[in-house]
Length: 170
Image (tube, rainbow, N blue to C red; front, side, top):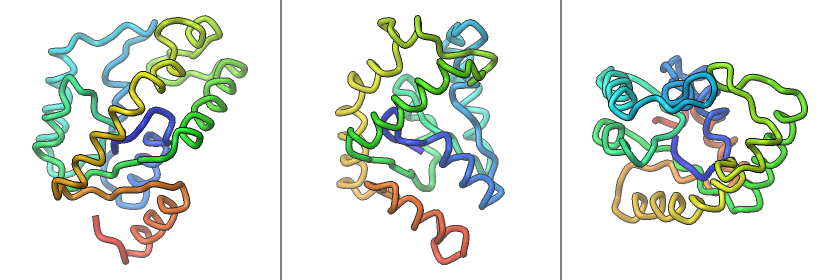
């Protein structure tokens, strides 16, 4: 999976894993320790390299610092290229819900009002990364890479239903 922040990559990766039986790995779980401590880059690279050396795997995203590792092995990229209003709306609703209910998201970490309003806010990250991520997906499509380019949530649901029925091949 690859897409803009808030597009639903993690949810879709989990659903795709359920449908296909292909193991899914949450990148946030691999890159953040409790207390939002970043896993050192060499450990991230080792973990991603090990996962991508397997025959089958689904990652719910890929970070720029080690993007080439999964790209060199991926058979297909599922690119979620939704309009900003869709992805930001989802992200805002998700973030507010997490702040209110305090649910744990990765390795016991939680989103709080403090993190939401900080310079490291996931909401700000959406604005910092949106254009770059969309551009990358569109460059992959233009270059002929095998990309499932999904531009609307309805397209995503139709595609996943095809995978479920066996009429869409990954």
